[in-house]
Amino acid sequence: MNPASRRVQRVYLILMLGNTLAASFIWGINTLFLLDAGLTNFEAFAANAFFTAGMVLFEIPTGVVADTVGRKASFLLGTITLSVSTGLYWLMWLWHAPFIWWALVSVLLGLGFTFFSGAVDAWLVDALTSTGYSGSLEAVFGRGLVVTGIAMFTGSVLGGVIAQATNLGVPFLLRAGVLLVMLIYAVFAMRDMGFTPDRSRGPLSATREVLKQSIDHGLRKPSVRYVILSAPFAGGVGIYAFYALQPYLLQLYGDETAYSIAGLAAAVLSLAQVAGGILAPRIRQLFARRTTTIIGASLASVVILVLLGINAIFWLAVILLVVWGFVFAVAGPVRQAYLNDMIPSKQRATVLSFDSLFGSLGGVFIQPALGRSADLWGYGTSLVIGGVVELVGVPILYLSRRQRDPADTKSALDDASTPTSGVPDVPEST
Image (cartoon, rainbow, N blue to C red):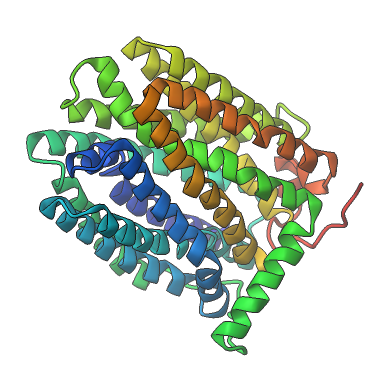
């Protein structure tokens, strides 16, 4: 890797480290925080659903920002929005605010995250291309997972310990503070490279064009379309399971006020993510096609969720959680690389945001439904139902595999001889 590419990767990894550290302060306690504020399971996961609804609502408009103003501008706006909305969450917890306020601020949180989705990955890939990088995308995304896993481990442990030593609100204040630090770093470190923002159109015209490009390069291309259409099932179930496991593990542990245990569980999941990020490129080479890895991971996730739901032993649940995290960590970089290699550079942020939109759409409906099932029948049953729902996405992924897109069989060796960005719009095969 040449020095310029190494610098781009270093900035990317620092951004991932700081933002994940900030986010993970509350990952182990978020559901406990909402329940402590007086919300029911249904209301807590409905608040999360409003968060994902915000992501659905704003994905395309914020994609316009990334493609017409710049990736850096999108990142900065996202950091500011998340810091402010996190502070509002803390205030609502203090005041035991009614549900309507949680819904509104959760939408604002969703807005903040849509400024990140697509834009950061697109910034990385375009910047690497401009510096002459010719390595594999799986390797870079894998390193990103390692860094975020370390940050998640640190933040989750600290968040749980600090919450138990003080109260459930302090980790939210820490999150807002770290986000402000990352804002300052990004102002000086990020530069849009290998990409020229298109500022020739007004906002409404740009939004229409972004939507058109999303459809043309996303939904109208079968190999990309089926990956995007599968996202709601894995995405919606995944985010529910992650947050439902917080109170569920405490139930199995036998002490529902042991916040440090909830933080530790999230930290253990992060270690699995580190291992998966390291091994993802190697595991990818065991299979001829990327979709084999992605589909296999989805099937494994379904099995693990069912086992988690019927299990009643705390330490066995932790082991299953580790395996679940590892499976997702292995599949994540492969899925990212598969999509990136099927999307032209100019439309990359747009289509990746569109993919994120569909993933969020699943969370809008699946989270409150599974939260209600937890109120009625318990967390274990809701996880089993979640596994069944995720299974629906597997045949859709298989339809992408059937298109036999060249990106499906592209390996790290191919990447070493061919630039991985600015990928031409490869012909569709039947």
